Amino acid sequence: MMEAGPAPVVIAGAGPTGMTAALDLAHYGIPCILLEEDHKLSDGSRAIAFHHTALAVWEKLGAAQPMLEKGIAWSARHTYYRQVKLYTQAFAQPGQGLLPRFFNLQQYYVERYLLDCVQASPAIDLRLDHRLVGIRQGEQTVSLEVETPAGRIQIEAQYVLACDGAHSSLRKLLNLEFPGATHDDYFLIADIRAALDFPHEPRFFFDHPTNPGQTILIHPQPDGVWRIDWQVGAQSEVEAERSPEKMDRRIRALIGETPYEIVWLSAYRFHQRLLRQLRHGRVFFLGDAAHLVAPFGARGLNSAVQDVENLAWKLALVLRNLAPAALLDTYQTERWAAQQLNQQVTHKTMLFMCPPNPRRRLERNLILRLSAFFPPARRWVNSGKMSEPYVYAHSPLSVPDQPGEKWPGSPAPGAMIADAACRLLQGDLEQPTHLRKLFGSGFVALHFARQASEAQAFAAGCAQADLPAPVTVYSVLGTRSANTVGSLNVLLDEDNTLQRAFQAQPGSLYLVRPDGHLAARRRAADSGQLAGDMRIACGFALRS
Image (cartoon, rainbow, N blue to C red; front, side, top):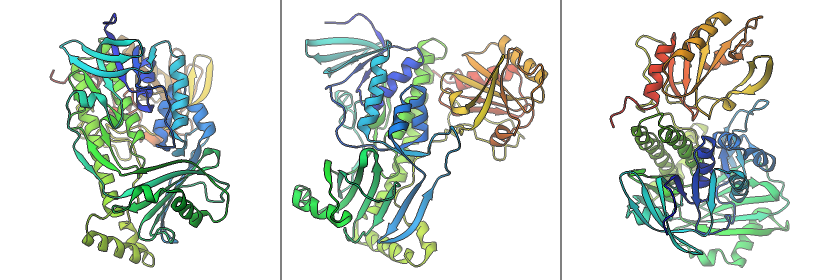
């Protein structure tokens, strides 16, 4: 049976990546069909460490509040050699209203809260127990063959998002290679529930006394649950290592006689894989279907959310005929470079954690022993570099700076804009807000003006300009006056917080993409230049 259609977008996989994609498209007014092979949430903690930028996306989509109420925020990650602390990766404590830099929450909770939002959205047609068994691409549409409880059907779509995980059915149906490698060493991962006095911050150990020559990672989780990862080596008999007797000895060695309960247990070998192309015709690959990395540094699901944020606004513009189809090619350009960097960073970590040969193991062990009493050696110790948003410095959507303009300390084109507190004035209303809440629904222009008359002139010019897509102009003013607002959206910057964050001068303009990355910056700009910069950021300068 062929369904009436085509649907604008079909998403394969209703895990956290697929549900985030469905909600983000719905946020932009694009309906979708979301297919899932079964009807279960994840078991076990799986992905647990989330960056504040992922939380900001889920906040925009209405799912973040229960996550914040449930999760554990942390601002430091500690690395040890045996019992000697080598270094701490410390992050600034968030100010009032800012999101925590990292927070821990079991993946099944993330999925539960996302599912609540999906089921509440009239724009998302969620279909459980729907298994993809065939695909055929045409010039304008994609036809999917789907096995359902009621029999086999066909669904037609303009675009398909493959969010169906590491064992992606779509990747197999398209006969795509998944280049990369699997690390030899095995890791045991257990969630245990116990009343422990461990610090509520991640701790990573090289050569822990209870796991000689190997590593241990301990993460706090809600509900009195602790995630513990033991490296057990490449030659281990995994089933024997995870036997009740051995697990009890292993856990008791860490926690003593404290009562505990194992709530999840699994064994893994970690993978480093990346598709050569993230786009295949009208099919786009996101998250684990497109790339796999070792988890040390939280670059898995966090980067999957960044995949979604990158693609959703581009699909929305193209489907609404506000941008050329060539804009979609920049998903490959931008996200492949980001994922290649993730591969490189995690590969270096795994080389240090799991040396592949005797020479590298000797080097690693010498570094660790030296670092215990010679602090300068600690810079060579690698327990994982924490995830950060990628800077699309070489993207064709990033507008080059004007020759001769100097931008010391300013966000660079392609960088994600850092969050900051601000005050928004709209008519008679004044309210505190944050920059992150202004982004994520369309283009934003931040115009730093000396006085209200300059702001009004610029905003009036923008209203008359031939802009390729909607843009919200915010006038950043340092002082208020009787005629400050009018019809303007004013960000009041009396303490120069925003001026310092952007290293702005009077007349400076910053064009921010819907995903929060900077598209262009100008020391002095008019509405005509804004229109030109937006055409570049929307892909009109690309070759089709």
